[in-house]
Length: 193
Image 1: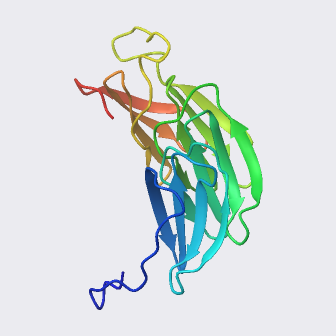
Image 2: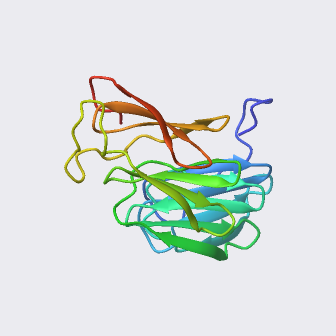
């Protein structure tokens, strides 16, 4: 779509019908699909040409494009980094529970929220875990949630060096991006999804 001309430039039918999310950077259109054999596709939006397609798993969130890398979170417990140029996977991080929220990226740290309430900070270049925070411990009311009751279903937001994330435990939490240390938490009275 050309926003300047207000018209469709190229029209393409996806190889399979599915739930999908996308991201755009420069001339790259990355489509992440929920189901099927080839769930991650890279199109050149100027030519409409499919550059590559791979099986990225059951991708449940929006992809992130950062320079030469693409990051995707799959519902069934893994986060992956791919080369934008050829779709080759650089690393995969296996998570202990499902991922329903899109990751967020800043300062070389990929922040991932999990269904069981864990918040992870991963090194974007290597996939190594830099920190982990169990958002269900030390709740503002003094209790600890039962597993999966306090899951993270909302995409974390990063501003400067602070990660802000809402939980299914009806809390909003601020976390240091570099260390994973909790700064504060605020009860909000309803689930944040």
